[in-house]
Image 1 (tube, rainbow, N blue to C red):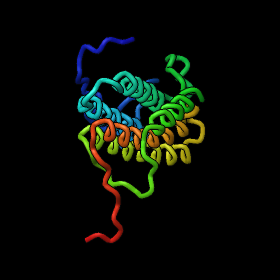
Image 2: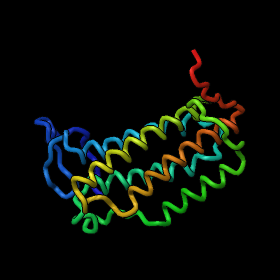
Image 3: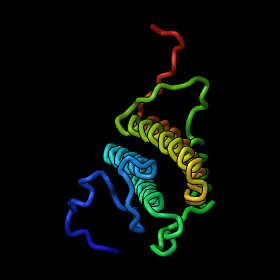
Image 4: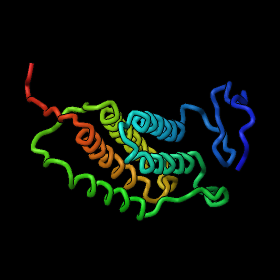
Length: 190
């Protein structure tokens, strides 16, 4: 792994950046937006972690942060060069793990009968923000796939789709564990 000795390189001063494999692209490129939003999601997830009232979920959420770095790295690399750079690849087991965690947390939650408003504790509200950013990443990925059919890493769409579901259940789980009640949506309340 390369050592980061300088934070600034000045190579992006003209509005371009390099992909992992060396290809120069505009900073406005959809690919850059895509992995930038993965970083955005990861940053909010970090805030969620720091606001947890217990350490129960810290290891799990830090694992997800690492997976998000893996995903961002894959988006930042040309598909034909991912193997050369030994980037970790997503597999079905990553999606299945998220499903099992969703099911496990959901067992302790009351059945939803209404839509709920995002909120609750600080960490719970942050998990709701993570959910919405994750959905944005998923939408960008779908757009990216339409324009670049063979560039998306395997299982990336499934992973992001399941991850947003995970964040919804996580928010509810955190709020329950922190004693925060859920506020239901009141149609037409004014």
